[in-house]
Amino acid sequence: MRVAIVGTDLCALDRRGGGLERVVLRWAAHLAATEEVVLVSFIPGGRPLEPGPGDPDAVTVGRLADLGPALRAIAPDVVSLHNRPHWSRHCPEHTRVAVTFHNFAPAWKVPASAWPSLVAGTRPLTLSAVSGALAREVSSRMAVPSTRVAVTPPSIDPAFIDAPGSDRGPVVLAPNRLLRKKGVQDLLAVARRPEFAGVEFVFVDLISPWLAPTAEHRALRAAVDSVPNATLVPPAGSPAELARWYASCGVVACPVRRPEGLGLVALEAQACRAPLVTTDMGGLREATFPPNRCIPPKSPRVLADALSEALADPGSREEARRRVLERHSSVASGQQFLRCVTEAVP
Image (tube, rainbow, N blue to C red):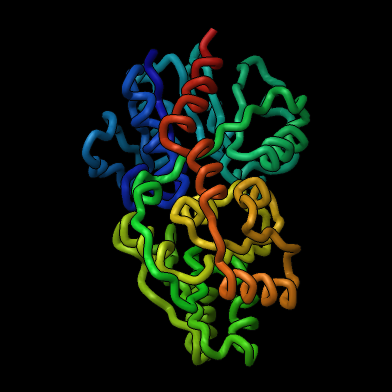
């Protein structure tokens, strides 16, 4: 079976990509062990992709108009699309299409009026999502039975599975992108409380997929700089370095203000046995395992109490780690992705 796996127009399918891109690359590597896989990646100008060790063959396109010709040249049995269901119209006429959703509807770039028509045409689409919450969103938006949307849990990088243990310090780590929707300002409000004066709040200056900071990024950088016990650090240079951050912090915080498809940061942190606090939006509840806390969003007092509790008594996180590895290892996740792709083949 020949499978063309298509990235989005936001970030190239390489090791420098974001969470979605790295998940897709791990799925591609799993499929490549038994199937013929070709990556189709969007890069401005269509310059060649810089492959990593063991990456499948790849072609690049610079514009959406180039996608159809590229796929016809590949002649795949199945096209795997991600967050872009409407791109099915660019796929060869008799090719089956599997669409995997990683984020909620605003990230699909599809007008609401077009959602039902995407699955009402003659081309059958195989649908999956990275969490049950997101699968229900897809089912509702596209007006299809819930049984038509499979759940395909994403994998985490093996570096988080193999992270060594470490002594934990009084540090609240916020490793998500530097955006308001990730709860940066909520954490800064907690950091200003007197009881957190001896706790360091560490934010990552991660602006991907933007290449230059926006007005929002600049405002948040200034906000972090204005709080004495808050620090802004450059992104980790590798998954292994990020794993060391997880392993040595007092608690990882994901107080998002908008629904998450699932929450890779939450999974990575728990794989490293880090205490975790998340907010109950989208798939984050499914990505948060006891004794870690999943709290109501936009509740500063509850957030402060949950962070204090985790810092004071981190306890054992082995059960949370076990549940992450059981569902989100490269093998377990890859096998489910393969099933979804295989189901698209008659």
